[in-house]
Amino acid sequence: MKIFSSKQLYEADKVTIEKEGIPSYNLMERAGGYVYEWMHKRLQGQPVPIKVFCGIGNNGGDALVIARLLLKNGYNVDTYIVDCNDKRSTDFLKAYEALKNEVKKWPEIIKGVENFPEISPQDIVVDGIFGIGLNRCPEDWVKALFVKINESKAYTLSIDIPSGMYGDRGLDKDDIVVHSTFVLSFMSPKLAFFLPETGKYINMWDTIDIGLDPEYLATTPSDVKLISKPEIQQMYKGRSQYTHKGMFGHSLIIGGSFGKMGAVQLASKAALRAGSGLVTAYVPQIGVPILQTALPEVMVETDNFNGKVFEEIDFQTEANAIAIGPGMGTDEKTVAAMESFLKSQKAPLVIDADAINIIAKRPALMKQVPALSILTPHPGELERLVGKWDDDFDKLEKTAKFAKNHNVIIVIKGAHTITVYDMQLYINTTGNPGLSTAGTGDVLTGVITGHLAQGYHPMEAAMMGVYFHGLAADVAVNQYGIEGLIAGDVTEFLGRAVMSLFEKPEQEGAQAPPQQ
Ligand SMILES: NC(=O)C1=CN([C@@H]2O[C@H](COP(=O)(O)OP(=O)(O)OC[C@H]3O[C@@H](n4cnc5c(N)ncnc54)[C@H](O)[C@@H]3O)[C@@H](O)[C@H]2O)[C@@H](O)CC1
Ligand SMILES: [K+]
Image 1: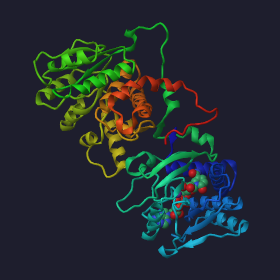
Image 2 (image 1 turned 60 degrees about the horizontal axis):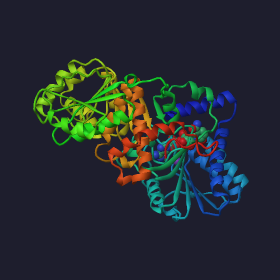
Image 3 (image 1 turned 120 degrees about the vertical axis):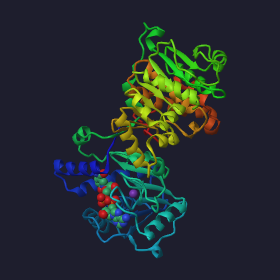
Image 4 (image 1 turned 180 degrees about the vertical axis):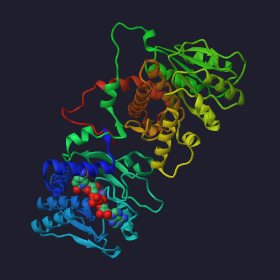
């Protein structure tokens, strides 16, 4: 699914109005009408108190349409105009007129803190104060209203985007955002929904199709895409009956040091469960009995030194995909071994953990990293690699430029893991907080490597690896719970995650939201 920028959404609006030859106000009626239907389907006429807060732009206009339709259909509604700006939009004024003409209960005007209504936890708040047109920090009294809404603990339905959040940029220090129970976003979710600093203000979201020009939407490229089941189904190759293990690649996992051999075990087993035909672990001598005991399916190679860490990386295995880093440590001898290893490599590698830290400390090493290698940093490792960032949007820009300059793929691990390549962002939709536990990064490295070994393009391997890793965790929490989940559980449910690609939705016609 494409994620459009605010600029593109305004353009889509314009194109639709021109092509259909309709007044722009029709789109507001459509948008408000669909939100009303969404609410009516769930509320079924219940007399629950609804407080609709409208700004003075088109987001406010949408909210006025919603308020009018709710009132006309007998709902218990109080409407408030948050009078934060003299420049009311033309369509807002039309929506205001329509409301005044059609219902008796007119909106109250809020000009400051003294006009705030009481909001109870039993109320439903419709948040239509600001949409994607917010372009500066709201005045203090408007922010005080946001705080009041947030402190009320009322169910809060935000229209298009939570008020106070910008569509295409991060928050400033003093910004305050409405905490949304649910966001109904027009046409496309916004990038801000998936970034840690802003996404935390959203509980759930869904999109509403307001019928913008299909041709514009289909032909306009977007730099940001959401990766969910349909995208993964398209990449998945499956297997024919006449296959043997040699057809599914050989993964080599290089890593481990004294006390951290588990990282290699986790990655190696995950590569097998991801479908790699063969897996070899390359570990320091001390790790050989550990690996051979723990994982009978995995072959083991080691260096010629009797050490607790690597002193050289030199192997016989003819691997189709190589991962380096899990549990490897950053001992000087290991650093030297990794430097000469990198020089000898031409095919894309999977680079994780300590291997990233080693590169971050010696930026010149990036020149030795083969094109299309996949780097999988967590936030701390990413910062060591690309430098400090001001906010999440700045982080994405810095990462995208770094990836472009070095022709590599970067997987930014987090609540919504984002795969970055060639200035494009691919946002994953699976996973849960249970993944915040030791070793899940090693499992991810294994899953990506397992896909790379099977012949998937590095971009596909990265996206499929991230998707299945998150999905396996989603299945696993049903058994172990969020806190109880450990990294090895994710590996055990990888097969189940792949199988779910072929499951039909439970209810005919029901569409699971891409993310909740
Ligand atoms: N194609 C679409 O996506 C459609 C979008 N519509 C709605 O239109 C919205 C965008 O409307 P607008 O562009 O009017 O923007 P907003 O409704 O977000 O309103 C912002 C208005 O307030 C002003 N403003 C910005 N920051 C301010 C601040 N801090 N304090 C006071 N005033 C401030 C802006 O100049 C603008 O006029 C969308 O979010 C959506 O709700 C719908 O009406 C119809 C179709
Ligand atoms: K809003």
